[in-house]
Length: 376
Image (cartoon, rainbow, N blue to C red; front, side, top):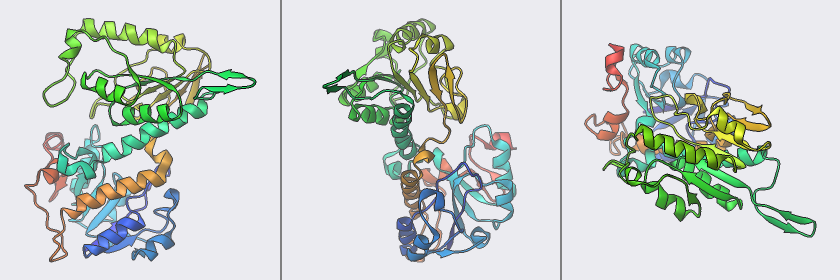
């Protein structure tokens, strides 16, 4: 069994799908590992480190591989170099990209989308959305602090007192909770909001104050599975008014709301941006899906009336070494379930809910139920 670690074609993607540690782990499963030259350089991993871990560094490594590990979905050019029947495991970004999924099926590869991993206990170590969002939440605070022209913690000096910065985090999922924890560690006064009642306890456990209209509708706003319910128009108006008033007083606002397969919800209007003090900063983690902040520009820091709006894409990739280490571990634990330890060969259980949840293409067809209809 031959596993290839691809070099990413997109120069804006610095992450890599394996590390020397996971190379050693994959070799212990009986695999031969080949790595494309320069695959890990942007993540601080030179070719020599892969070689020392037991991999072979080789151009065109993926052309004869049984399994290809990537960060991003393969391009059309990539696919021409893969053998039919090869497994390709990556973050596929399938929503709205049905033509690209069809092209993988036409190329005869068996594609797995890591971001479709079921949210079950057994798959926690394979959950790339959580591992990468965790780092994005951390980096959002660092980026916000870097753009903010003042210190975050309160400082009492002989020359006077520097007040603590006020940080407001919108959305208390994985990224939001890490942003709260990071801002708190840096000494900011932190508040947060979320539409799920259960988030209040999580926010307060990190030392932040929860901001929401806590009426009876809010208390019933979560399904038995833990997802947010659609709120009434009246509730949304009351919540928006509360948030608008709160944002006026904030120094840094971090937005984290993403819904898979849909445009990002607009949380911060132009009027809210205009109400903020000059020198304030907004960091939008949803820019790749259109953004939570009106006026955000993908890949840029733009300024509106003295308020900076940070719209960096691939925020986890801005700390590529850490992001690659976690992503590579996600891939290893996923692939481990597909390899027979006795025969040292691929042995995929197509009835496994982890496999069924992530498999996009097989035997020349799109097989995932969410995308098969559009590919027909």
